[in-house]
Length: 91
Image (cartoon, rainbow, N blue to C red):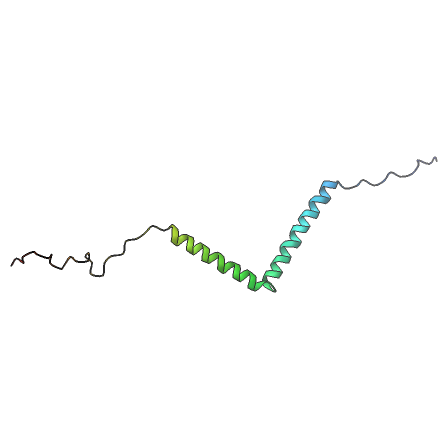
């Protein structure tokens, strides 16, 4: 038998696949890390951020709501029941 020579090197994985898997792994690691941080050490920071965001949202909703005319307590304009000066009362 004759020798066929050295074996060819095994095929390498495509480089784009390694980059894609690395990027997905990095995103997963960052998401899990932020989740753990937000529920442990950074809990107060997250709660302060949420409170600030709610306050801004409430202020924005209040500023954008249409103005509502408030009625007078008696239901009539001020001075509607007082006689005009110089007028003679009619009986």
